[in-house]
Image (tube, rainbow, N blue to C red; front, top):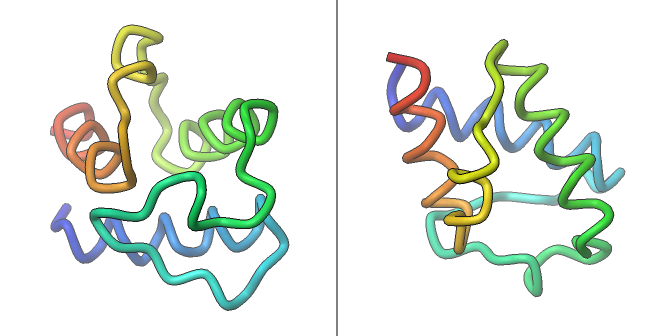
Length: 80
């Protein structure tokens, strides 16, 4: 899976979770950039990402995510 393919799928997940079809993610996108992305929605987002990519993200990795680029790196690592 390429980084671009991950972004295509992640954009759809974010749009669904946050009910916003205008979301376009970038490596440096952070919670403050997405309306409604708080700690509660972060949990829903992680669950939705796990469902989309069919694997569990270990909690140790979840807490290291500082931005969407970090999330993409983790997805690529776990999807190998």
